[in-house]
Picture 1 (cartoon, rainbow, N blue to C red):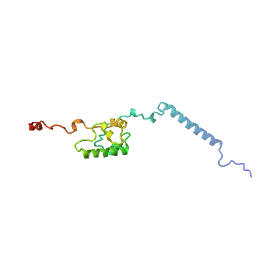
Picture 2 (cartoon, rainbow, N blue to C red):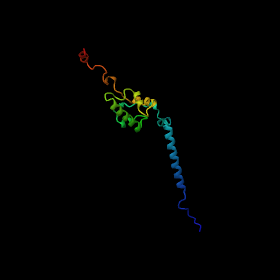
Picture 3 (tube, helix red, strand yellow):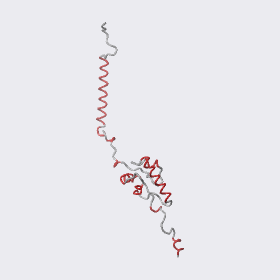
Picture 4 (cartoon, rainbow, N blue to C red):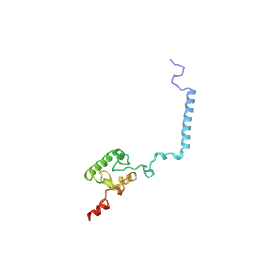
Length: 147
């Protein structure tokens, strides 16, 4: 029962030649791609925080939604909601003031330390000091009525 015909799954000379050519073509294309882009290998895989530019639009932590705050680097949803909770509690206790005047005020929020606050400071905008309520007489007329 010996069968002289080749097995139906055996490789012929034509099959082997085609596989060898396709393999050589694949290796050649990969080699060409590496040669052409050799200066960029790995460059686009490394992100250095010092090279990141702050967004053109800055976020005011006194008015921003938790979703906007969550996009800040290192904040995330949990810390963003903590900022909003602190802000609302502060507003209840001090309705005439804003919770965050300067970046250092964010350290009062549980979970925000000095390093994290320093890292997000370029992305934040705070109200100018002139927008805060005046502590003295509002107008010169108020001072003249006291006399």
